[in-house]
Length: 190
Image 1 (cartoon, rainbow, N blue to C red):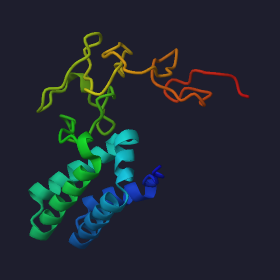
Image 2 (image 1 turned 30 degrees about the horizontal axis):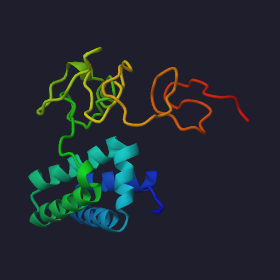
Image 3 (image 1 turned 90 degrees about the vertical axis):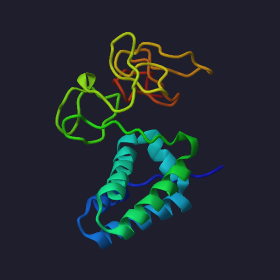
């Protein structure tokens, strides 16, 4: 059994701010740090993919920006190497499509109703790649969703029985007392 040591909030902020830095040395150190994490602790990258897609998408977007726009050849090369190592850590889960807000170009999550950066409504946006919409509420949905995050409509048949909140229909853990998504009390305190 692999013990997952997720990235701390400080590590995540350090990586994002390092990739955004205008100082080439800071970017280089951050790229190498991210490479090391992807090689030594790939489960931390997978954990990001599962529990913090926004940060992962932001990191991938910043890596792509460095690859495309940075004038420093060394940084572009290191960013390409880093992106490949992140892809390898993510394995088959890696997706190059990162939805960006049409207004401010910041990474967004399809489960959101509004962009957290500028407040633009996501339902009215268009994306470079074809993104499915929920047949019930017409909001954008992700391929991996079994239920719509917006209206709760069933999108796919489930392979196995998953415990769900009776209120919002999202998956919950058996030990949870309160649903973290909608606040519904799942069971009484022991």
